[in-house]
Image (cartoon, rainbow, N blue to C red):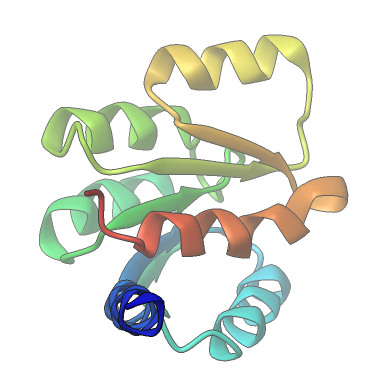
Length: 142
């Protein structure tokens, strides 16, 4: 009986692992976008479905590109990620927003949280937390 339970558990895990996470990436650094694309390519469940470099373009793509998670930088060329976070939460309150920035200050974290960000990672020290966070988001809630 235990073997059957283990097999059922494995099947459930495989089903959860099959869930795709479509990421809309808002980042003005081409170098970092390439690095993230390389990181994502090693994880078949994670897919970058679009990207923007500016606030204006990001605001347009929020409604135009179907995505599950928004990953956004705060300093965009031109513009800021804060209005993007607010708009994302206004359009899709349940979709997670992850901030990935070089400005890891308590006041910046607070501004992001007030705008609706669900996660906040420093690009230099915490970028390695991005993939595991996205993988956790891929597991369907039960």
